[in-house]
Image (tube, rainbow, N blue to C red; front, side, top):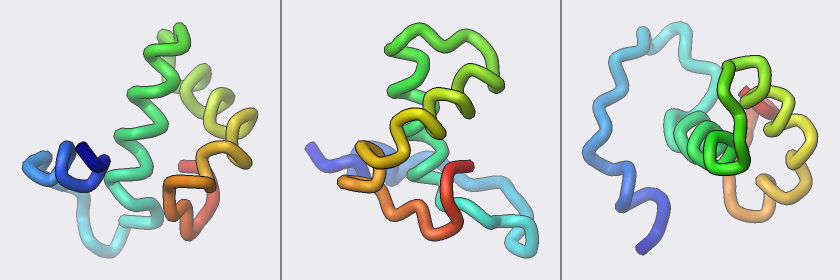
Length: 66
């Protein structure tokens, strides 16, 4: 199963003018970080920054790590 099809039904309630990052990127990074033991938003962001090279192999990340 590919990431885009797995998260296809998740609605994006963010305002269009405020969207800097793709919802798919946010969800995948959050999921992977929590699996790796992250409990707080700060830990999820730290995970994303530390694993950016790896994450770029399968995520778009057009504006960097969310």
